[in-house]
Image (cartoon, rainbow, N blue to C red; front, side, top):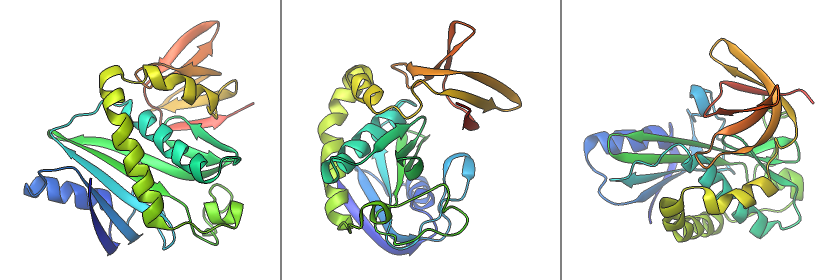
Amino acid sequence: MKIKFYNKIDSTNLEAKRLIISGKISKNIALVAKVQTSGIGRLNREWISEKGGLWFTQIFPNQNFNSSVTIFTSIILHKILLHFFPDAPLMIKWPNDIFWKDKKLAGILCSNLGNTSIIGIGVNLNQKSMSKEITKLATSVYIESNTKLKLKIFLHKYLQQFEKELPIYLKENLHPFKPYYQKYDYLYGKVVSISIHKNKYKGKAFSISEKGELILKIDNKEIKFLSADKIDIID
């Protein structure tokens, strides 16, 4: 996969959309920024993207991944983090986060624009501190391990693993990846509250479907959720 680097940009996801609309993208490419001034998280929330983190967007022309690609991507990213830190308490939190213990380490944002798929990823790697707004919620690899990683080496390792396993995902969806996900499922067995628009649902997190849906046990029934506006862990 070709890589294009930026010292500073508003958002690699926004740049991806601009390039797609302009018709300048014909092959798979990753856009990587040292700093994003307007990083975007899920539901258009701000993603603080200071120097030291790895901020990038993958573009796949002539591909329309389904929503389960977020789970697939989180599994690949989790594998690479474990490659560097095999004993780290790294977990996958539905629908799009990687956690170190109980703090957010990485996030994933997937979408389609026309006949092109976009995967945006933010990983807190080498930041020595987090801003006051998110210090209780987020962490970095450096903060947790006192280890500095080379961003390009991490990126290339991730891209190699993604391209290696992508054909399996495209052929079989999440079926061969579910055992891995369940091993590192942050929500498994927890009682959670899910908000979708103005509706709230409470139940015990059980698993995910092959479509990437979260399965909650509510009143002895298994209910599937494809997305949520907010997830709170109650117990």
